[in-house]
Length: 310
Image 1 (cartoon, one colour):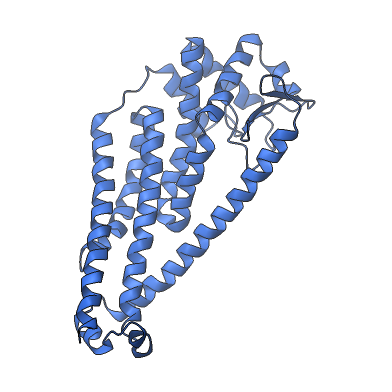
Image 2 (cartoon, one colour; image 1 turned 135 degrees about the vertical axis):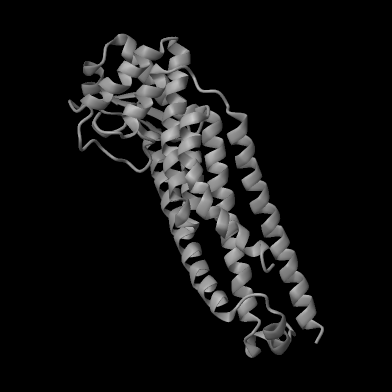
């Protein structure tokens, strides 16, 4: 436990460095899975590590040690963590649990509201057209989900571009992209160091949908032009429903080095491969975090048995 309990914390410092390479060099669907799994596993592992460190501090308190029939004096002697470290871990654990619970509550409310809104929308083949001159389009999760497009967006794009837009937004729904975003954000809520991973997931799901649209239409350049055209047309203050997964082209201007230029550049380039090296490294990180957490938990169990024998 002296080393194993700290490994997930160390990995959470290193893992965000791989968010950009994964999102830009690996096939979007695989990148989304890897990034989401990394955020969730490391978020869980670091929370457990903080809990293990906090427990080693609690058993040093005589009043609490007697509840478990442990010897606080033996715990002070055999405990591998300093009391100050345990106290800090306890405070961080409380913050992680609070932020994760808050995120789950807000996400559940948002998804419930989205499902109710989607169920009440008149639709034809899952498509809802709203009378609004502002160009806008987004996927709304529900049972079933809906693709919402404004008349302004329909007037902005031609018929071929309509098909690309629909293919993109429907890919969000069929692949359940909102679940990937929610799980990655849950890991980042428990461990703020993992926020770059969650941010990368919001990018890779858009790339995933872009690639689906390119496959459906067979024209990557046309999809790239549609992405740029929709981004330029989208109003700056378009509706930002928490349930919406983002529209084709994002709601940011096509300037600077933001997600839209990166998506357009990726569509103009050949499709990405699965990049087995990045996948293997990610798998190794996840395995290391899982095994080290299990080892730390086992070491704590041994420690509790030792101090309980006194």
